[in-house]
Image 1: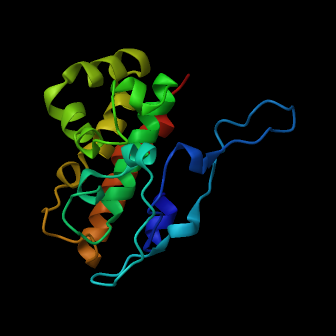
Image 2: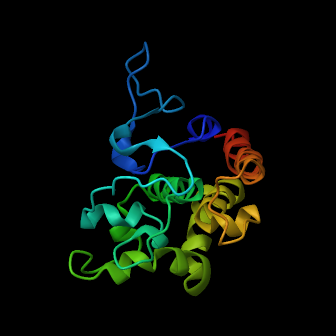
Length: 189
């Protein structure tokens, strides 16, 4: 994701199904070397450019930033939305369960309000979620997930900024690299 955003591209559909692992030479899965796939909806990040809508599938809405979900305002897709999706994937990897089970989501097919509230529940109303993540994965991993889920707030970006100016892009890259990529790289198991 860091490299994709460096060349000003957006994935727009990052989810756990988009991440593949292959066996290494000794037939065990090569966990440190995942492959990101699912670039069907990827596009250059250009402000005010009309993009095709990413197909909406109810059980996949959990990976989408709340501002891009059904019933939300029609905002241009942003790098911070991809980063949010990565946070959801990282949380799922830690608990090794689908987000609908982690969050105890009931009827996501009929109620998009449940998936739209995931960010608020993680960061505000249900501190037990972050505490549980911190207890299982440690401070660094939990901090990286929290940074991804906070998005613009973690990067100090105004909500009205469309993430496309050179200064904002640089801020996102530096902060994402320092607070997520490097932090995850420092983790020793």
